[in-house]
Length: 403
Image (tube, rainbow, N blue to C red; front, top):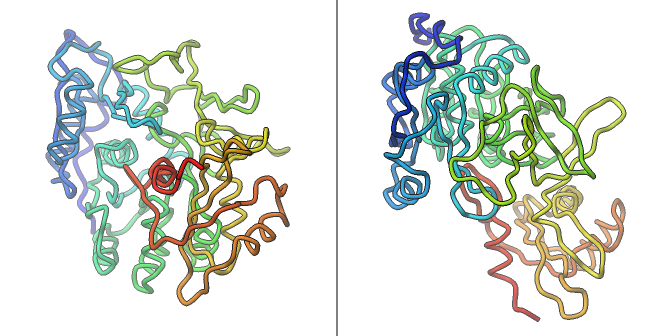
């Protein structure tokens, strides 16, 4: 049976600090496979106010130095801030979402309420990212110890790690590329199917991967959120309890109990400028049943021939082509159109590369022909950053000839 911790975490339910002066922000190095017990103890102390605020950083020295120099390590921080989580969005410039204990606990508690209650977690995401951090917070509230594996786990590690979770509700938090990897191995797939839920965040889940997971009996929960909202705050399109969502001209704006206090190094314009709300860079739509669907990011939009194309919508259409295992859509310079829609595709095993004309016809069946790619590149894999987010900028830089 999985190890369970004494229910000391009950004290963190207050979600505030008592008698703690403004203190310097501390960096905590998180290795790929952390020792979970000491990390849980540290984080529990931070949440209940016995320890001052921390900035989790990766063990990579260069990345850690960039974050510590950018986010004010050693400088004072307000005493209601528990954890600063680094986030660069699509700009590459480090920012720090200042999360209070109250926000972190509200997020973890709402997750338990939405799922099958508190349980034991597989820690397969780096804990310096908010998704991995929240696995630890949920574990503290549940009084359990997560089982940690390297985020780039070998397939034969997964069944043993899941077996180690023991009985009771069991969960994993993964990104789409990890799920796709696991689906390539029958034993890993079967192990994931034993879990009460597999949460997928960090970006969209391609339809083909979601369908394959469902067919294998894996209960996938699609999560949407970010460091600024203490992690996923909308599950399968429905906000968690205490989370507010509205659309401003299609832009998703989030509010509620899980919201960060702001940035450690505020930006201009400040997306936290409206009290109680965070203005995202995502474009969304809400259907008649109130389910939120994310259409793409404003800063990823492609301006082509005077029209705007959202890459994520085109990727969803391309993903239904039988020859395409994975894809990314981005814009490159075009002297006539401003930008032309370009696709990088990973082929399914044994498939022949489709022509541009073939893919344009395929996309035009469900979208306006303006959205169809005018240029296609076959690649062995797509570049990703952080916890698996697609790096469109790297692709644009690679294939943009300026013509």
